[in-house]
Amino acid sequence: MVVACLTVTLSILATPIAWSAITPVVPGVNWPDIVFDYAGNMYGTSGSTSPGPAVLRSLVSVNTVSGSITFGAPTVYSSLVGQTYAWPWGLAFDRATGDLYVSSTDGKVFKIPSGSTTASLFSNPGGYLQWMTIVGGDLYVADQFGQRIVKINLASGSFSNFVSLSGYQFRGLTTDGTVIFATAVNGAVMTITVPGGSVTTIATIPYYPEGIDRDGLGNLYVAARGYAWQIPKTTTGYGSPFIYAGWPIRASHACKINYFLYVTDSVYQALGAVFQVDLPKAASLADIEAEINLFGSTGWISNGGVVTALLSQCGAASSAPNSNTEANIIQAMIYFLQSINPNHILATARNILLTKAKNLLTRLQAPGDPIIGYVKDSTGNGVSEVYVTLYDLANHIVAQAITDVTGFYYFADTSVMTVGETYTVKATSWPSEYSYTTANPSDGQSFTWQGATVTSIGDITLQ
Image (cartoon, rainbow, N blue to C red; front, side, top):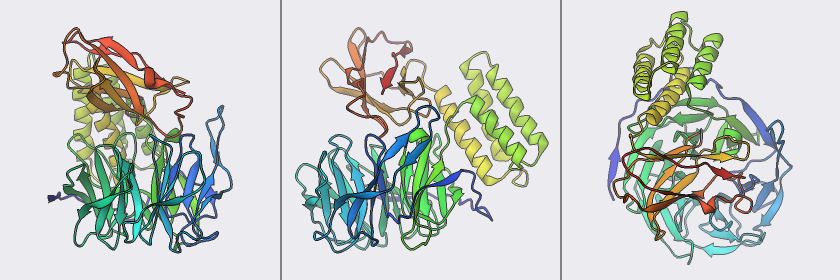
């Protein structure tokens, strides 16, 4: 196993600023972990609280006119009474099968098959098991006091040690489908390669980091006691972590319904609830301009000249004659944002604008002959974090991509493709609010590769 460390500067605000709106949506619960099914219904583990060891469910209701989301009162979905006398903790929902997995702090993992509410023992690797994530055909489980991550085969239930690292009490786990992101009690936030198990520390966060998740821009969110931190995704890796929202929260798990992050407060806190936190919604010039105006009006950018200069750059970029010129202007904006005196801009505002500007720049700098397209919902809005796969005629995987917050994706490396051959683009995984039973993206979009030009694929629509 290879362990690498990166030095990352920590950006801590003197007072935690709730840039995001924070709304309690399921009061009266102290769930260590939460997940969402295809329809967006919320599941939580009961921890040490009433009604004893169980998985509970809160049904979602979406107002299709206003887009507002409400969750019903939680009820017992599956009882674990008699199967474990410890705390049920982590949850993982298998999108491929609809099965739900539950870990407990006495070293057991239970399985609730799709269509059933009955939990049965699936695997018993021992230890103090907590958060989980699924990559491919394997379930990865954090064993805090065992200082390891356990790998469990979903077909057989057999287990093995995936990573063991002295001094690292692993807690939160999530994935982008290719690497695992993990937190540890010592403050480390890590990437771990799959299947190799090489560990790289990308940031250090105080205050006992626990739950972790990511948004459609690739930014990471870490819940620590008292704060939700963002680790912004950059074109070269990850930037400095900063306080995204202040709240006595503990576990975190993101549901991509209307771009919200859902977090639960600590089982040791008295505020017991699941909270809804706004996430960045776009990476467009119009969105960046709106953020600048907002920060100027609230004093987060306290210098009028800075606001004017940033808006002027937005105007120049919007009237640029081509994407290369626009990209150059956005790059200049990024340099300017990095150089602003900290007395004139709050760290949170700077990081939000940098994250969005860098995401826009990445899109503008896409190679000249990629395969590009959009995944949209039934109303024509882009859908983020959809995994899109490119197949050849023999149904072999040629390349994979993931959509950004506007639904845009591109396959940059076309060197392995043959001119004149037919290829198909399919959506192979999508956010939980879209149902596998009602969505029909599996037919995909087929095209003949001509080479040396941008190939635009017809929209893939999720219902």
